[in-house]
Image (cartoon, rainbow, N blue to C red; front, top):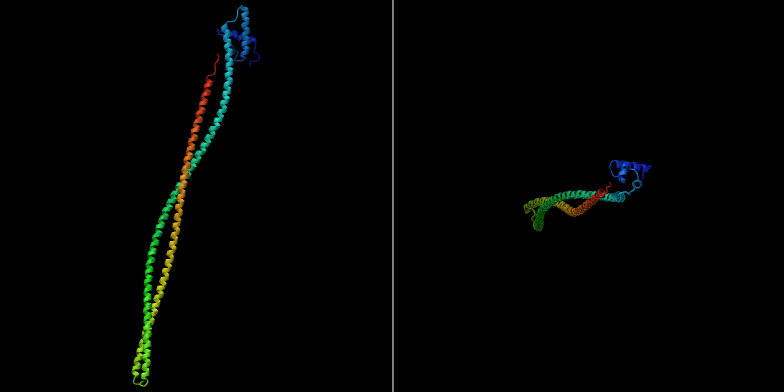
Length: 337
């Protein structure tokens, strides 16, 4: 754009000043002398008019070198304008691409941060699963020790139960033997008493006539009967003692039955503990499968993180390359003298 108030006289004054300094009055030189103001087209028009006037006064035309220089100056100005327009378009396009790449880089960085966070959470979860696996192993060892202890207790109880059973059978055999002996004794006493009664009846029938003569024999028989009664009382006492022993043995048998019931309850507890151990073993197997799955997920996230890092590096390289291209274009702008 021409400076407001740029006149022919201003261009002439600047041209004369350059000629006085021994410099060629080109369009750019005149424009610089005017303070970098004014349109180059206007300055060129005024310079041509000045050259035409001086050529008319001097009677000869302007040198060809000045015309060529003026043509070159105008072509350079046109090239500079076109270059400026192209560079402006390139800068706009570069700014747009730079914003797009910045958005892509920001998205990649956010996605990388998300993947890294997921990877960190996966590592934390893997560590928690590892600790849970260790706790489960400790519990399994404790359960194994408890199971071994319970099995040992069951074996001891079974051994004691076998001993008690043998003792009970021995007592039953003794009790049966005592009962058989008592029954035999009772039968023997009964038979003896029946024999004595029959004999006594015979003697009474035989001695009714001789009562007085056989009084001494009767007294002896009474003494013998008293002895038999005493023996019977002793046998009854022995029977009572045997029955008391039998009752005691029955009490011991009930105690043994109670112990047996306790042993069976302990055996059921051992079965429950074994079931719990089996459940813990299934839980450990499930935790192992979860640990393997977590390791696989961690590997996948690591691969995604490496892929995103590669894409980010490629985007940064592309962006740097475009910066270099823009810088090179700016450095190749034509410079006009």
